[in-house]
Image (tube, rainbow, N blue to C red; front, top):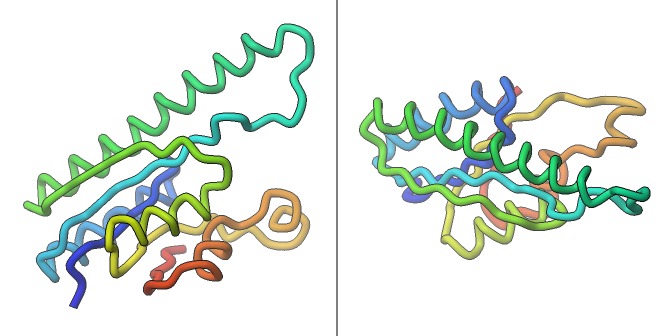
Length: 144
């Protein structure tokens, strides 16, 4: 049924929980698991004086978090004998980047975690999971 599962991770505990589901589904269906992490290369609208240092620090920390999230997913996939691919996307807007990667890679399922933000937090911070659900041309499984 599923041959290629896309799993976006932000390295959070929510993503780690969803990773277990993604690995299990990939194992059950004999699917390849593609893990992606999205880094927004320009997360700030305006930089204060000396902002270059802040941006450099952010990018370094984001790269480290992305690599750590991917490494955790790789460990789970290898332990389950699941074929594994990974990449770090540098795009503004993680939801659009995830959906575009799903299209480009031929994924037939996206499995991702949701932080479950509601109310003002959801309005201010947005919901990547909700945006992926809205934009995705393929099935999406949200793990809470």
